[in-house]
Amino acid sequence: MEPNEARIGNFVLVPQTNSKVLIPSVPKQIQGITTRAEFEVSEGHFEMMIKIPSKHCKGIQLRNVHLEFIGFRKINDYQYIHKVLDITLEDCNEFFMWSITKSLNIRIDYVHQLQNLFADMTTNNFVPEFNSYFKQKKENEPVQV
Image (cartoon, rainbow, N blue to C red):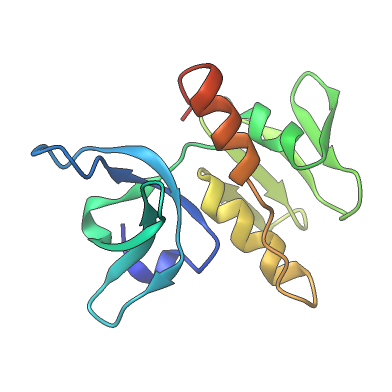
């Protein structure tokens, strides 16, 4: 993952800190981005900041449960509409598509891309919060990524 794809507040998958294998598998919120292309995330009970090279991170695959969590509702078999913002997304099975005009479509594959879309569309750079979603899933069941 490139550091310019993400912003502070985005959720991405990072490798487990106690693992020798660098497979992105743990959802974490980016707290900072360094000039050395590292994402700063908090770790452990005391939320110590650790730096992880962005090349070892990847996006969290966007699913319909993520959309519903932040206020989208299903309007038919393949479309979701947001309750506040004027965004309608089409479910293309492996990704979502936002058709701005007939000839301008934006493909959204990952949670952080949707967070960035919200931030760009709102005047106060609002980034949808997924913290409670991932904490709830961590406690109850495997995270759907």
